[in-house]
Amino acid sequence: MQELDSRADQLRHQRANLPEIAEVVTLQGKRADVANLARDARIVVDDLTTEQQKVDADVEAVRARRTRDRDRMDKGLVTNPKDLERMQHELESLERRIASLEDDELEVMEKLEEAQAELAKLEAMVAEAEEQITAVSATRDQKLADLDEELAKVTADRGPVAEGLPADLMALYDRLREQKGGVGAAELRARECGGCRLTLDQAELNRIRGLAADEVVRCEECQRILVRTTESGL
Ligand SMILES: [Zn+2]
Image 1: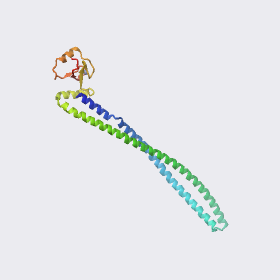
Image 2: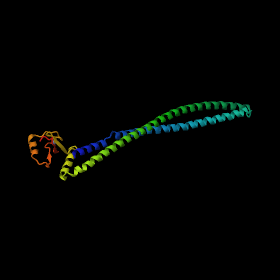
Image 3: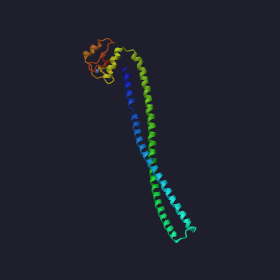
């Protein structure tokens, strides 16, 4: 019975302390951190995309105006010298504006490419963390299922063993298990208590030898139930 209970305690301890449980929690934290960074990076990409569209539209508008002005001049629609001069100035001004906007365009494009690369890197990290979470969760679940299966076997084996024991002895055993780190009963082997490792003295051994086989023997030192075996040294 003690063997089965110790085995069950061990299985429950393993179940509660599976390294994969902590690992999944760590990975989920990592995934959340990277996902936050990816979200921020996506905002940067969106903002730069809007900025790029605006600069593109501005360049297009100024180029259209330049084309229109050139057409008018080419078709000889502007004849007045003053108007011609004004038109020349405007075209020069438009050229400068276009050059400046094209610089802006390049700058925004570079920034956008950098931001897109950063976003792609972070998204890959999120995907990697998710893959790891899936893999470690699967391992964790498999191990939990194996432990549960073994625990169910131990519990099934315990039933018939417990049935054969008197209620008062079970109560004593349960109380001792609670008080003494899960070990309520220990074998007496080679005159030694398996619970506290104390060697029993001759007088105590004599006393035990004189007891009936169904008498409950307790260790004088640790109070645990002593289970007599053929190797007890009595
Ligand atoms: Zn003892």
